[in-house]
Length: 155
Image 1 (cartoon, rainbow, N blue to C red):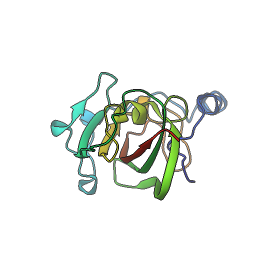
Image 2 (spheres, rainbow, N blue to C red; image 1 turned 135 degrees about the vertical axis):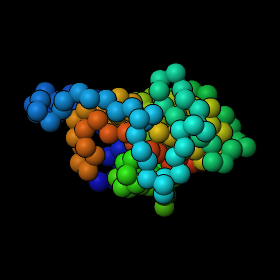
Image 3 (cartoon, rainbow, N blue to C red; image 1 turned 45 degrees about the vertical axis):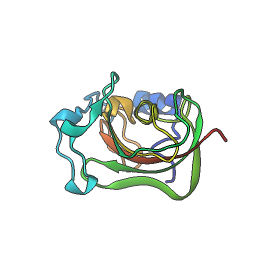
Image 4 (cartoon, rainbow, N blue to C red; image 1 turned 60 degrees about the vertical axis):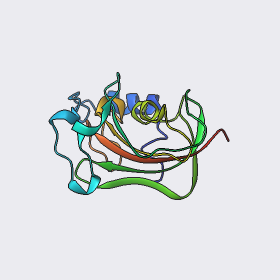
């Protein structure tokens, strides 16, 4: 189940939606109207909202190189549903991900502007997360909360 929150091909999601229309009813989530588990430490009022609708908060401001474009990065991350359910995690070894092609839009958007060494919480509405279709333990139209640490830019 590793990396399900990040390594998804849009065509697989589209295919799943086309083959199971009853499961893929479009009803995008809106984090501003949702309640988050206290364990996640999400307070949207204190978070920055991007133009794409993702919310972000720096928990640790990094001092390394600035991530100013979508490219391959090495990260540690955890991904949660709004109720605090852990759906995916890679914290033992650096996880390489191409923010321009294999990351969810919410993760990519939320990581821009981070410095290496930084840790950030990103709240992504379903439209920027995994979309309308259920995927493994993630129900369709789910807001995702990412806890991400930027370890390195490049491979």
